[in-house]
Image (cartoon, rainbow, N blue to C red; front, side, top):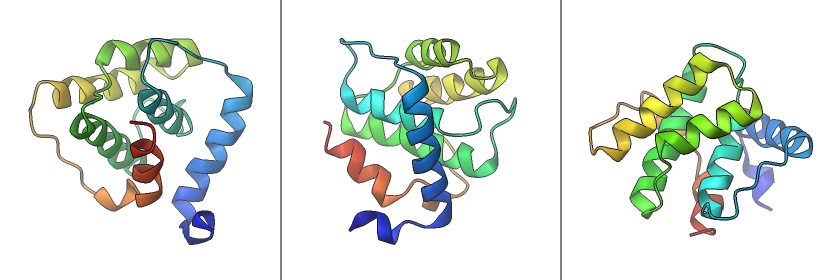
Length: 129
């Protein structure tokens, strides 16, 4: 099974997402499911931090770039709305929205540790496109 091959950081993100998904019911029917799932992954990070942890930064940037590459980019407005809806730290939310803007505008984005955006997450998002 796929979950048996997850590394520690992936299990933390997966498990945090499971806890968060029961608390928050943010569903925008017009939003592509892949974007919903991507924002769920990001929402499972330490969103109370004003500056994302380097692992979370690499993961979030990888997610945003991958969505763009799949043809379903997450707009900065959607990121801001989700952050406000779920009570993410405003600085954390602005950072992630800034990365979404950078990706959307076609600018290069530096992902220091691309391995944190795992195959598991890629497969989960790709299934929804």
